[in-house]
Image 1 (spheres, helix red, strand yellow):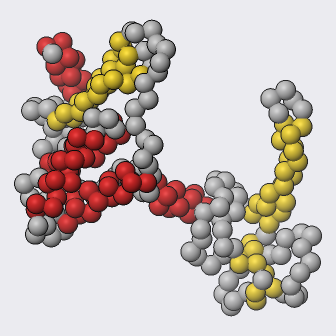
Image 2: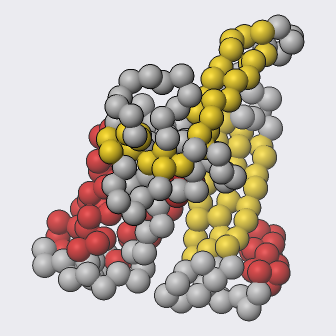
Image 3: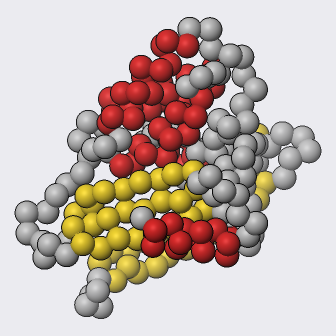
Length: 241
């Protein structure tokens, strides 16, 4: 609770009550939430960095007359809520995925790494680990492209993978003890996905029953002129191989 600063406007708000039901139609619980009196998306609990004030909610009797509430977290229907929630989600995901979201390693202009011999063994070990950790395949494939001249951003990304591996030792491949021994495979390609050469990157995975047993991603030697041509190239390579 604080006094409304000059030039600021306090938003109105109201309580929303609803009954949560179980799958059989019986009542699970009664829920109440706070909403602003404006129309926007509902993405609550993001951290607010802007100054947003709301009027004292109905039924709240604390505080002095004329004081308002300053929001620390976003509420339902706040216009800044989607952006705040996405920022919080992106920050959290960086701790749980091998490479950060929205990376630009291929177009990095950071200084060249002086001690190249530090970079190569780290990426080499990660390449070996990708045989039992398929979720490392993409980021290791990207990092391995800069073995000859890594930059500082590439080194930091490699360290991020190491940090991820230390924080998730239980991740890996789980092979089912009961399956039908039927092999199933899928393949796909991404047209012009390499920002340096504009070549297509193809990938395939093979399952034995419900268990993943083989996977591969590869940057092809040709550059497709359209997504349809990329799919045809992948189909042709699958037949040849």
